[in-house]
Length: 312
Image (cartoon, rainbow, N blue to C red; front, side, top):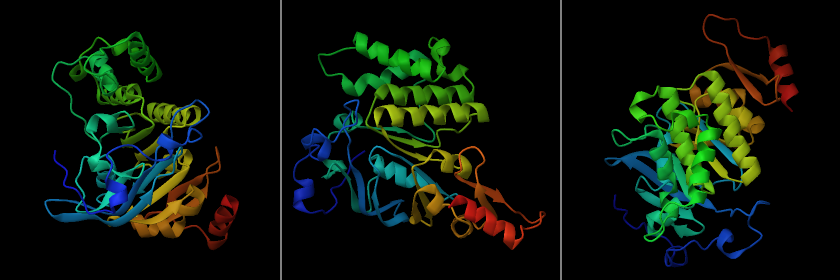
């Protein structure tokens, strides 16, 4: 894929290197010593075949935090994620990684900093689980450096953490949809990047494995400081696991911030065309969206006010 060079100020695009806080400030790391890189979109426009999907979008991804993007179908969530990952050339604006136009940074260098799990990943026919997860280490290997014991340990750890170690010798096409999804997540973990983008990582998973995967990502964030951006359809899981939420509609962001501030009755109605009650999650206190629907009575004003008060 070729990437035309969007017009941006010279100081942002002149040097195709990572020059942000992680590259210049030793303090810009987490306690484990992992770098914090800044990912930003400025005036970003994205689309397909000349048809705009995302328009004039500005975004600074919260460093070292979990950001969850939600919105109705065709609101631009996956398109935005593809644009941030350099898989989609901007129609306007620019994506910056540590202050540098991401289109000007060599792909292999980006892959050591930023990992992506797309919605429908593809793999060569006949590849085994172990081989696929091992490919996550390729960006870290040079021309004269093959697989090392450290690489093998990282791959094994990714397989163990995703519960796929016993599948390592099986071919990917032999697995169920849920098993394949966990294998792809294992590959993303093996890539060991400081920024991780995931498009619907809980797809095809039963509810128990959804919680396992999201707990794993939360652990990765809390222990390594990995910046995570993911698209989720389940609003309640999104609210439970997000530090920051982005709510999209018609290619733009209509609400952004902590879940308690963004997932409100009015925002849910605006983004999804859905009447709902928003109450505290009894497990963790995050917003819990309870759809009303046409065949169930709406809550009384008093109960709605009580639910809103309990969130504050």
